Length: 358
Ligand code: MRU
Image (cartoon, rainbow, N blue to C red; front, side):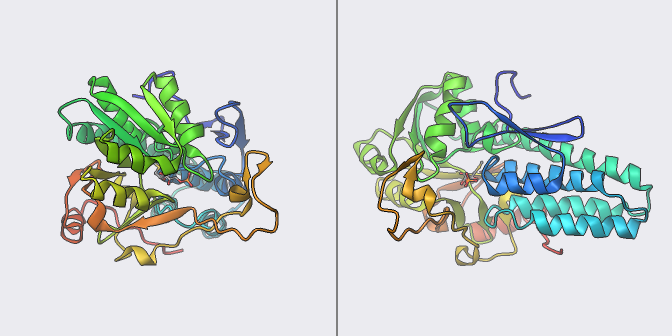
């Protein structure tokens, strides 16, 4: 159950999608309301809503909105409208596989219910999107149970980016484990990487931990090695945007450096994600599409420009952590240990294969 004070990234209300505008946090709690799928796609693209599982939930609701606003009179025409929305939403962001997973799941519901009345199918699509959201919360609570059982004493955790309630349907993945550990009195402190350039750590993770009253310290990304090497970090917990068949993992830029630092200093490095983030259609990390974002995110901090306007800039939003740096992958099915090419496959029948059919 999501606690009352826990922030919600996205809710379905009066046939509309309401999202907290994560670009404005932590200074302002403002909401964006969408009543069509293009608005949802724009919200995903512009980072109103972000974090792999939350992007999946938003895409599902966007798809449901497309169904709701369709004027089609035949099932065939209705499906055509859904295909247009599917194609539009799937272009919102490229790396987090949860987006494509959720859209495939919604499209499969539409296809397998083609014979029912269109209005009933519209309701069914809304129901499915709601199920995806609720399931995600339950999955994260399960992940919290499995993840927290890895530690039998108080620990100092270092985390990167935001993997909390804001990045998911609720509760969080890596930050969900932190929540569970905290309930068990097993958190010494959380080291929060600020996570340049978008500052998800500083703006969102610190905001969530403050709301929860969990002891935390904010550091700039380049301080992580110093504290890990000093022995101030017992474990690193990060989320994932896409985990592929051999265990290689795409996550927020800077994750790979942390994984190398953790291995060098013999600190366990856990990747924490629902199975909807696992993409068994890709064999190794080199084939994961990496989003390149706007140069302004690097050139500016907030409204302040920090380098000459003409400076060349690169802004990959994610990097790949090779499987050999990952101590274990924590999912709702349990803790998956290396070798990942074998152990992910063993769970394969339970991991719903993502089929990008449309
Ligand atoms: O660009 P973002 O903010 O969508 O990136 C999010 C991350 O990389 C998260 O760490 C990852 O999605 C896990 S979210 C539970």
